[in-house]
Image 1 (tube, rainbow, N blue to C red):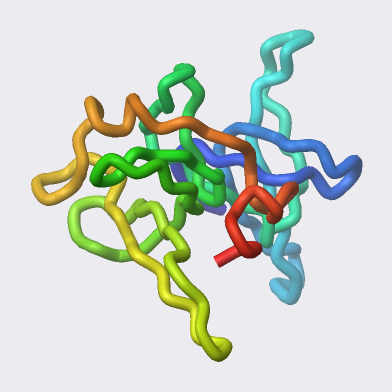
Image 2: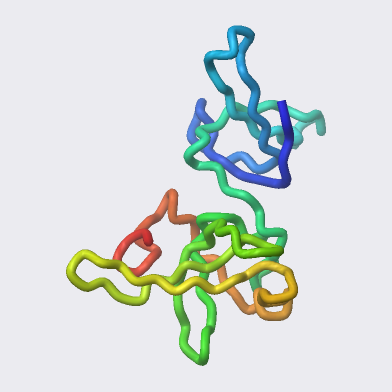
Length: 153
């Protein structure tokens, strides 16, 4: 079993979002993986293991939007780029010191989708906290893919 940084995912039992620390474990026969979010219970403060759907796992960027909400992977975010408001999806892309980026669909012609990638993390070549503090989370594209222009990129 291993733990990673702050994440969120949809619970298997009720479909609600759980926020905490992701871990994966195999059963005794090692033929099935179980995915969990370790979250603190609001009732008694104890850590609880909540089984989640791995396809809904979203890693936290560690950055906040202008409303002081944490930005997670697969959030639909509005950002001003070169004076124009654009909406994109926060994705993980291995681009150096930080892998989080905003993927913005720019055009679709003959089945080909063109997207631009804008780094949003902290690092030598990326935007810094001052820039991301102007971003605004519109929602999560797992729940609401219609937030992105022309569907999910």
